[in-house]
Image (cartoon, rainbow, N blue to C red; front, side, top):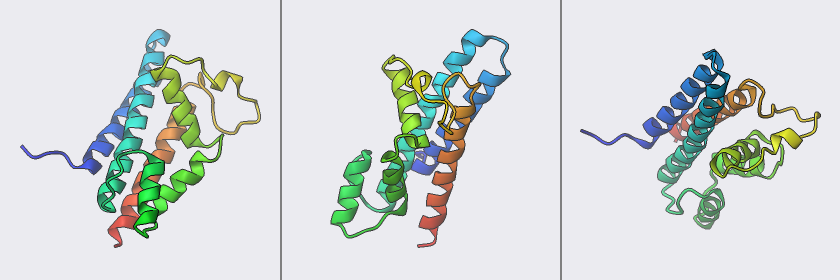
Length: 156
């Protein structure tokens, strides 16, 4: 039996998130949809880690899965990694989908109170309790980023 590639594992996490999200929207049990959305968020955050693992392997970086560490190592090696730069830019924007995904993950993982409920109505990104719209946005944005990274890295 061969080991799964990092890309395959990332794909599995994205697919799991997609399935949990779909189940949360199709079910008649509202109490279950909250748990299914939580599972989708967990798998999306895991898929982000999978993307960072793919980047680490593609650029031979040994800094683990922390964005800042990977950026420092890439810069130290004189390498520009577009996907890391994009993630850094997103992480510097408080209302970006990346930061909102991270907040949603922390709400679920650490049983924090939801920051989404306190968000202003001017936010363009959906908040929790929006029938999966925000999770669907996280899924589509992360999937786009993964595909763009793979396309860019295959050109070299």
